[in-house]
Image (tube, rainbow, N blue to C red; front, side):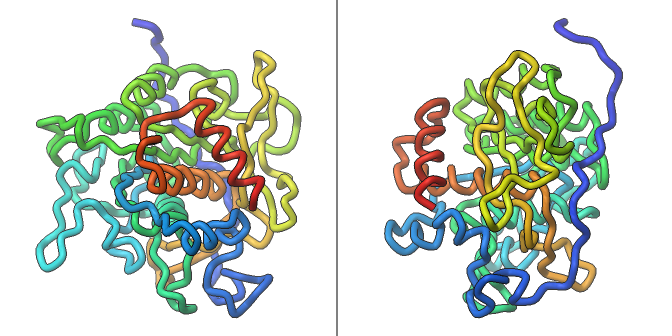
Length: 327
């Protein structure tokens, strides 16, 4: 036994409220462009065009509030989707309480982050391009029940990611684990309670991406697990490439530089998929919105060069830094 502690409840990072979608919210700098500003900011449209890399062959996941799996821009990318047949949710969806047997999202946070990773666009205002890797497949674990995440649910979700199970929690299949896991949540910095799970992911070849947190611009405000040495921590920038006022900063408690990179997550807001309430798309801002952009970029890199799948550390850090610098 390495640690005994109470089952803490963590609030999700505060984000900008949603607003009705329009073409201007996707591309305020170029209203006629249906590839959203944050996607273009990191040069993803050039990657699609010049290299043909769109995420094919890569499986991503999020531990979040769930996902609206039948969203028109997310359904075909769901690993459980079967054209002409009912969807197959075993091994593709996990509710830690074993009560919800199909991907759903009462909050909308998880649907938004998943959209930034994989949502497909159709080149029009009704279905703009908001996703980085639109041909990647996705699975999800509901580690956050609505507006909060408990230690227990986050731990159960971490273990499920290593070996997804049937809906009743049986028959684990390590071969069906995802390649990349997006985590748009954060605890107070300097807390290693999740370190063992992240280490197990890395040993299994899974690439973990975590939000730096929205605790503000003070030095040393970086959250955990984003401050761990073996995860990729992401802060947020605006449309001018300036770090946002809410994006947490390093150094870590032991003096290391964090976050590892910053990516678009603020400014005019990030348009992505919505869980409903009459909206298919909405804008939010936060390091939660920047993190899945980086997860999607890893999916593009691995899709372009499958020989890199499972590699982390300096290899991916250098490739991501190069890609973001080119943008």
